[in-house]
Length: 489
Image 1: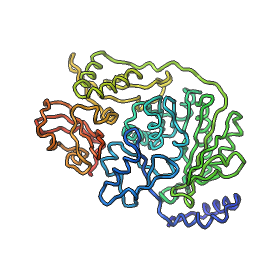
Image 2 (image 1 turned 90 degrees about the vertical axis):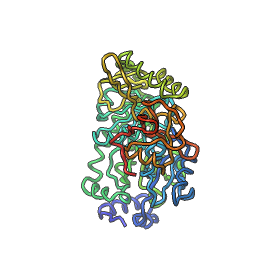
Image 3 (image 1 turned 135 degrees about the horizontal axis):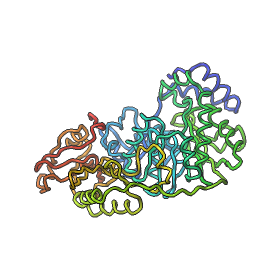
Image 4 (image 1 turned 120 degrees about the horizontal axis):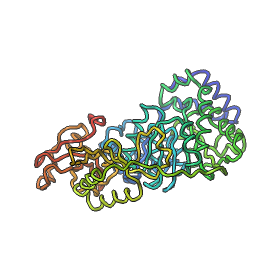
């Protein structure tokens, strides 16, 4: 059982009495005696939810009925308590993101559409950004921001695992972003830092944090973030505000305060799918916000509000002028593509180049989505799809591909692919960073020595790249799996 602080119990009991929920109070307290549910969300850039469910059900001791759908989203599943999804090769191929079920709601409410400009303002570790990337389908822009230098690296890896090709990551304060990007985004997601009482059951550290800081220290920060987010939304654009706390001050009262300050702000009703309740009726409009309660749904405490900006000023910015680099560098990249990628893969890369812009910095090649000129003034962590690095020796240029580039590709995009199941020797050794041998099904393959090979996971009818390797001898591969990603599976 989670040990609840007395001040929290008193606050919540008063809340339940104030809003006529007295009969639910015993069930709410009982929920803290129960275990938290765990979940994961399919990355629909790479796999359909039904196909992922079958793949997971094929693991030893598992079956499809153990992976029940999360009712308030269309791509999430609950996991059995003894299941360890982080240890599967499918996770490292980017087929799913491990996420607390209630946290799947805000990005669904945002409902990003292909071609839109979307900002995830407090994005780490990246679960909501990953859903936005999937909804954009490679069209438009996902701009993910995180102020923490430590957390932004996890964010970068998680976005790259999705295979997303149209993401920007910055490390800036919301206020600085707002000063550079007024009225520029179609939608902003602000999953703000909060007192975290909704996570008490899942994370004992959240109890200690609540005791140390409480709601009062969060509300001023949340107000500042909301104001900054609002400045960056175009007229007709939308803002999703979310927390993982039960606090009235950080949830409905925060939205009431904000709407009172902004006449052009309208609360948009959130569809209440099973497991999602109305917001507390602090006013008639606030029931259109949403709450998830642990005693009424299989998820932790969560709050979500959808706001629309009815008017304001749109800002047109000139495009970001990227440094394109030398022709020799891009020629080396295209030589690599002709040798390594199938015609289908080359067509995919050419389409990205046609719809984006080329950027090279310190020998690192990128394809950027459409970005504003203000990007030049901001601290950049990721600028679109990172392709790889150019090694220059005299007039000769050699291209070394990145793991991000590989993860954006499909198995059919590649000419040379060595595959194995999640339990195979080649996949296990690949993820441990070890030297590899070609599998038996490629024993008769006649591949040029020195050619770049993709090591890929093959499960059921799918094939998903995991690592680059170089053929050093007729059956020996030098594994290029990133050292910082190595897992002892």
